[in-house]
Image (cartoon, rainbow, N blue to C red; front, side, top):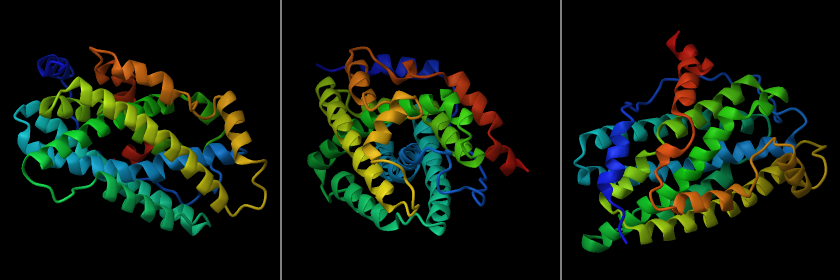
Length: 297
């Protein structure tokens, strides 16, 4: 069964919005180790979102750059170029946050290096040629389309999570994750549309979507546990697993069940990422982000 690319392209064109990288400037100097006060585990869950996941986004941008010569829809080509630019800005901004956290005692450099090696090993270019190279590109695009579904869902959650402000999350880190989340909502359709343009197989979409969910959930769990153990604070509270369940119950972090509940929506015939989140809300935040205003000045 093959979904019709024309339908996806029509929906894509309906979102007549130019995606572009934004110049932003964050000041992390006053950010403490636990920038969500009293929430050690929730802080490290957010750390996974902006310290670990960008390594996958780097590989995603690489795959899209490889696919670009095969995309003859000029609007989609424009969006792909904008997507790659946004991911490059994400990487540099999160690297600055990582360096700050490392400077105050959270040593994650070796772990990030391992994640980068693993991503390159599993999802990178494999020196293939001909049909094998093309099939591997399609497979990667399918995986990344599935992963982008979850980053868009998390982005929507970050934009709507008033609890983070109520808990007193440091404004620089709150702006960082909301800016990133808003851009995830903004470019939510790009990888999916690129996959549909280059391939469009429902069988591949379903298989890679399930694999994406099955990969991201353990990555979150393992990475959170690692960051919690590397946290040098003398009083980190009770076992991190219990903190995780408690923070989920109180809505301070998204529920892990999202990896299960979102899968049927992604696999539904006729689904398109434009159905996720509020583009207007994302664009309003991006227009008023403190980091964007700081860069303008």
